[in-house]
Amino acid sequence: MRVLEVSGLAIGLPGGQAHPLVRDVELALDAGGAVGITGESGAGKTLTACALSGLLPDPIRVLGGRVEILGEPVDVDDPRAFRRRRGREVFMVFQSPAGALDPTARIGGQVAEALWAVRGWTRADAHRESIRLLESVGLDGRLSRRYPHQLSGGQRQRVLIAIAFALKPRILVADEPTSGLDEAARRQVLALVRELRDTEGTAVVLITHDLRVLAGNVDQLVVVHDGCQVEAGPTGALLRHPAHPHTAELVRAFRRLEGAPP
Amino acid sequence: MIGNRLLIVIGSSLMLVLGLAALAAPWIAPHDPLAADPALRLQPPSPTFPFGTDQIGRCVLSRLLWGARLSLGTAAVTLALTTLVGMVIGLAATFGGRFVDRAIGVAVDAFLALPGMMLTMVLAGLAGPSTVGVVLGLTAASWAWWARLVRSLALSAREQEYVLGARAVGVHGPRLLLRYILPQLRQPLLAAVALRAGWVIIAISALGFLGLGIQPPAPEWGAMLQEARLHLATAPWLMLAPGVAVTAAVLACNLVAEGAQHLGERPPRELL
Image (cartoon, rainbow over all chains, first blue to last red; front, side):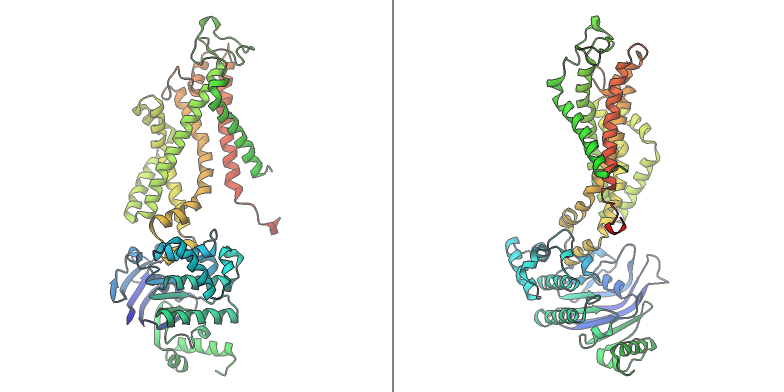
């Protein structure tokens, strides 16, 4: 089932139709599928992610294009149109898990909040379930009494994944979910995202500059350069035979990092 | 440099003393604040009348203590009302959409362009010289300041990453406001209340002094100053008592405000 369809998405400042910050983004995503958006810093990856959950920073607006969520067109110009969709339909995980968690609340309560404030559970059930969810992402249930600053970066990212499991969103938009994590933590987070896709049928938009994260984890790849989508296609083919010079450059850089011959 | 905590302790102790004096006025005032005895007019301080008597023979200390109720009570009510009005309007500007924000912005600009004290005088005059008139006049004159403050605080609170995170989870409406936005406003607003309290106390006294505020024979401090003015040369204690009281109240508020403003700004330990 098609859960997300984006065509001709343009993002920019109001009145800046002539110079959009992001333009021509095309995405199509089925339930349980995964698409990766990659490109260098400042290419417009994060703006695209924010637009998909109606959380663009003021005064940036969606200037044009069509977004369909679960087959329903969404008024992209109106950030309020996303209000009832956020959480249940689209859940965006921000770049820094340290900033995205409330520093004044215990993590168990934050997982539980997703259940009772968004999904309508009773508070008691939500609190019981929150401990089970934290354990299911590999965290000790006793950590639920801790505050975010008492956790490591990898643990915080797993708390966010636990929130994603609580919400069971149809679409998960993850912006650099593995940045700042070590190899082991990165693998764990990616495995959990994969589990969410397999068990809940959540479609995933994975945004990262790191091709290592995308290879093997997303079926489709979109390359953005300077705010413009320059190439899109199946991940394997695109990485093997990049057509656009910018993609080729990214792939070369990736091979160098991996230590493989270019 | 005096520590911020010390400033707060000194300021709030002073506030506490004044507040207790106001609350306990009926029991600790030696005389009826309104009972006049022309035979005892303009007496200098003495054991019977510690702060002397005024031009119609009323006990100045008793008037001062009862006046604390009026002056400080009116200030407290005014502050509560202006903060409330400013919060509602400021939050409406933040969350009510662009049109509401523009409209409120224009009104705020217009009100802030007028000199506050003059506006207060006109509005209090229009509302009629009374306690209610003072409260309404001051509220009408200073809501704009509060609305602008609350708007700017709420805007920056809303852009906190964890608030964005909560919105991404799907938290919205009253819960977003109560759990994620308002707690961030608490400390700066308390500092602002303390800062504005001094101004409000002075404004109430000034209105009383000008005859636009709380009316004689009620023992309001500003009105007492006005009455004392005529006897400055012969009975300086008449002016001294309410003058010191107003100064002490304003000083207490300003000390707390000064301390509270900088409380969160302690330099990180590694810089010490």
